[in-house]
Image (tube, rainbow, N blue to C red; front, top):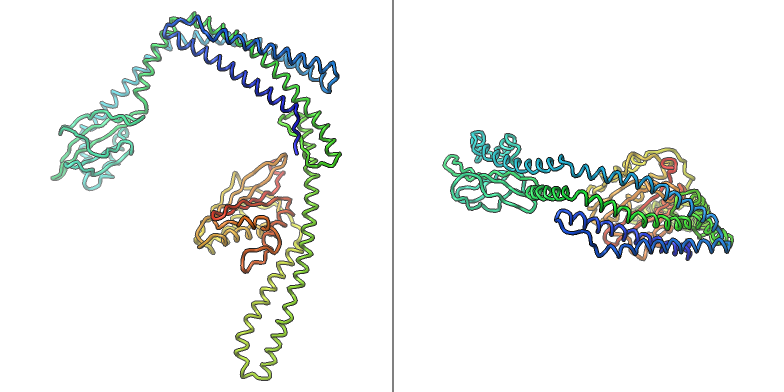
Length: 592
């Protein structure tokens, strides 16, 4: 449970209100400034704006809000409210900082505006715009001239001799000879396509109406792309071919040229109205400086509340914990010492809560250990009749050896199979009840996972194994043998869940943070049949299994090993689509 006080909600509402006012102020600045920039080039009168009288309401409303918050603070001081005097000091401090920072900022801004205007309207800018426009036109003309010269040249015509033998090689040679060409398309004399090479954007679906003469074709626009084409009619052996070579122009070349033309006209209009433009910019800067200062003062009131609130919240939390509520938490978004204190408090409460959970987990494990020992005792009972059956067979052999063969062939394999099954179950029960404490040492997690995957790759050739890792190899303090058992069990279950043994298993490792702790997260995902919803709560319960030959102890042992490594394991499943198991192992030494 986290704190949710009325004061916190009020501060959030106030912060949202200030943000909305700030957005409104920015919108006014953008709108009015935009009107200036749009009206100056057109020569319209910009002296009268209907919105300007309305805009004066904003600073008046902010000034009233500042006085209201100041009056509230005065009442809190008078009533002796906790933290009121500290809040006063903080508000005065923030206000002083705002005033001290705004003055030099204003001077710098005004100087910058003056310098910027002189720079923007310098003759060099106009010369640069004219040069850009000329470059765009020159580039277009050069493209046409290069396309015509190359298409009529002897090099290109000689390369066309490979049309019938090796058209792909022909295109490679042509593109090497003239990298400016983007595509070539060949049609036979009947207009049927023979070959296309190059950028797919230049491909024609059918041969255009050419008129039977070689030369430059009409320019074609395709969305943001423009194409220049040249037709060359060439006879090879006894066949005649229509060869069309294409060059792609840069996107929006025409729009760029038009933009440069418009920019030149706008620049000239701005230059003519330079003095008027400068005066209005100074006016609007002064007009919006006061609301910004008032907004800063209002924010200082909210920040003061945010700084004081953790102290009040901490006091309330200690009372709740004293009453026995260990789930109580304090929410904080700041990063100062007070928030660190609150996080330490929350961490302490979390550790206390986890300790209680660990006690419950230990009690659960102890209970299942007792059940395992009892079941082991129960499973040994069938060994006695099996033994008696074996002795009976032996006696039959001694008394009537001629008729013993059929009895042996029918009974002995079943006895052996039953004994082996019972022995395997007993061994797993013993492992679960007497699982040793992990012997930790630094191990390369990627190598351990790769070894596990390789051991199953050959046994399941129809399954695709994908191993991904985030960043460099991860070193963990783990018991390698026990973790091999964990990974092997999960990978084996994933393989067996995939129907027809064709599917995909993905293993991924990455680094995550939970509060102040760092973890390595291991994800094992399969495309198997998934887990029925009614079985979700029983997956980690001992002796629960959906397999005909399963003991039901694999996943409980996995959970026990992860628990002994101070980690967590859980799963997500989608029936019919697969299951993903997640393992979090602590690694504070890496990221702490």
